[in-house]
Amino acid sequence: MPEETTQHELESSRSEGDLNLGEQRAKWQKNNSHTETDSWLARDERVFLHQSLSTPCLDVLATAKDSRLYNLQGNSYLDFHGNSVHQVGYGHPKVLEAIRGQIDILSFCPRRFTNQPAIRLAERLIELSTKGLDKVLFAPGGTGAIGIALKIARSVTGRFKTISMWDSFHGASLDAISLGGEALFRKNAGPLLPGTEHVPPPNSSACPFGCNGTCNLKCADYVEYVLEKEGDVAAVVSESVSSVPYFPPVEYWSRIRKSCDRHGALLIMDEIPHSLGRTGKLFTYEHYGIVPDILVLGKGLGGGVMPLAAVLCNKDFDISGERALGHYTHEKNPLACAAGLAALNVIVDENLPERARRLGEETLTHLNRELFDVSIVSEIRGLGLLLGVELDQSVAHVSTLAEKIMYTCLGAGLSFKISMGNVLTLAPPLNIETDEIRRAMQILIDAIASAEIE
Image (cartoon, rainbow, N blue to C red; front, side, top):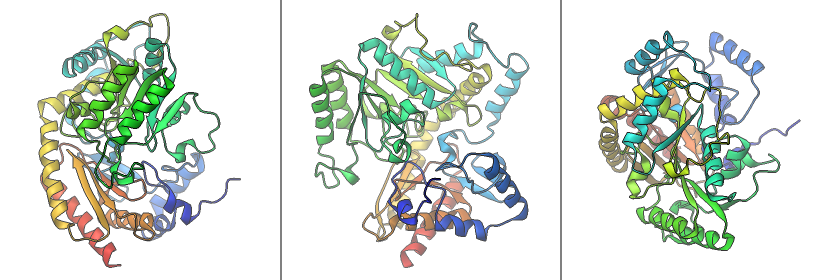
């Protein structure tokens, strides 16, 4: 039997999400006990394997609409977590209309056939992306899309080695955790993919190169060093920006792009959790003035309803017609593709990237003003509606403090994610009402102020 997780282990964990164990969790469950909910949670716990970040679950949802989740008692949470699928909110009428209109016509498409929604979605993605990203494959989830990207890179370069970042997350399958850099997923998992080299990420908050909070780009030099010494790397694989969030300086990606070109390695950008408008541009790489060789999308692509991911690459990479790169049963699922096309059109037609940019700037300014003198807050940062409030790592039991803040906010009707144990990560729908984002920020500010006093 595995050993019981201790509070110390919880506090020392660094993960892309908050754990589902610990004292704060137990207090929440006790204070929010409800007979009907407790019964359903017990049934859920009996039938699902327990795993970190997930089961046992916190509450039971009955419905979701726009920016809110509703539990069985009708209580609501403003959802600033959403597993990054809710760019257009929950139950967007145009997405639901597209699915309803498709389900009676063609609900499934066997692999040897194609269908109109899949073709239209692929054409739309190519139309909206940068020149050079002009071929597409779909997958039922982001992890599978990462696997496709790796196969393309191997096929194109004839190499198998990769460079990826410590602390990164690219999915939970064995190939994806080989790229990823979190112990929560890699620990005791056994042999992983060979040739998966890891380097420090461009995170000035925990830089091993002495940047003291301002990136000196030595992390980019380190990637160049590994590319040169290995000599046969197929691809550099990285999130364009970390969804923690951490944001590399513009010069970082310019250097990495040049290094990849110099050494014949492809640049694979994983934008699964934050592309499609969240950062203030439709695609996150657009902030950096470069174009990846392979782009991976997911999560919000399904409109907050259907599981869907996509891989975009250069048409010159279309050289593997005799191999199976993905070959997923639901590769061209017409319902998912109809939902994806509708969601993409909503994002573009309603100019949600620009709305995210404007609301993000306003919210960032508000948070900086209100939390300027709060001693437990070390940094507030954001890009569009991907925002992070970082608690000072030097504070005793900072992860426990972060959990206290989160559960206080949950009690007041705001849900968000804790990343790396001390970063309060905020990612609302891009079409959230202005009064709702103001309400959410006041809940957060009050909870942080209360935690500082304690």
